[in-house]
Image: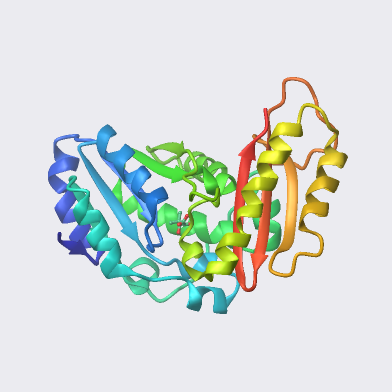
Length: 282
Ligand code: PAF
């Protein structure tokens, strides 16, 4: 498998696809690939003539330099995983300088307020960083379709807004969350968990499932209290936020209204590892 480390190199490889109007599917990643990523690549490869997988740990979306430093990296394993899929895959793994030249800064974006809620509130500048790198990557790869996991549901909504703002000719697809046997949503960050933390982390999905089951019966405030209660006095787990939000605006909901669709969102710390998850409620 040829690895393309520069935008020139990947564009040269994709030239025949651009010229013949063949469909390019794109799966942007930060590496440390898992079954969640693989499910995106498989979907992309069914729906397109080729798939580009980018592996790029984007510095501008980290609001904490330690988090960036510790982000799991397993490039050799990632390439092996992609090779084993035996699909028409191009790997694009640029250097930071190739993406940002000498200015590692985010573009100023406003995503209709989506950027200020939940992840945006707790990780300042995160979505501007995500928007900046994806705008650059989309302009290099020129995909027809791009695939994102619903584990990062807020990111998915932001990316749809980005495509509108930048008028990019790409269709964005959200794909279902893939879970470990214990219910934990697959994430590159799971690699940073100890065995004990991994087992404890099953409480995240267990709690979300409980909220889903009780959603029609209990008020939002009662559900919020149930979640607080579940995470109270847990030595290994620290609840950062739990919110029930409207899926379009991502605004926190205090009272349910007819004809609105809601999702529950959660962020939890296990030591220094921060995990997020979400679930559809109605
Ligand atoms: O979800 C991710 O891995 C990243 O946020 C993305 C979309 C690759 C942008 O860096």
